[in-house]
Image (cartoon, rainbow, N blue to C red):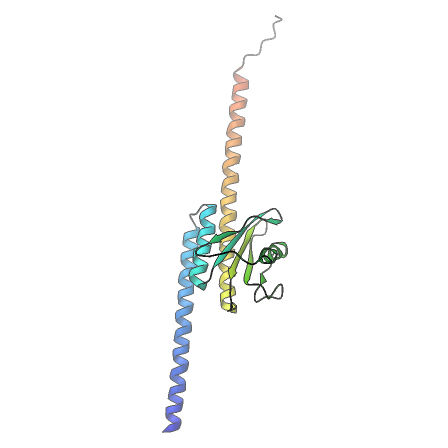
Length: 195
């Protein structure tokens, strides 16, 4: 009876753990789907806000954004409910993520003692900035890192889409201006008579 009770208890414990893992995976999937829906119709500033809000909801941690200006980082922008600023050396960790186009900071081999986990938001053609997740005393597990990569990857694609829309609109305005200029020049009568 003791052995049967022990086995039943062990089985029940494993089932509870699996049910909890399935609930957590379902929650993350719902948030990722919502993130994708929210990013589909956002402006650039809204994209960054959505990423901050969704990552904070998923990970229950503060999120930072460092926009990129060429190969340099712009000023720190706190997202969601981050309070305070990172330590003085944290922007250098974020810059390393930008330069290497790879994660850096807490839980990685590059600046593993940092307080934050930093991911560059980039596509093949463009780097838009670096997202930082302040991990505090509890490092991100592999599932959380993969979730961060997914959200930041979606954000980079959305930012690239917004940039392409802006460039297309600017090209349309330039083409229209050029057409107006050409029409104006054609409307001026050309006279070859001497004055």
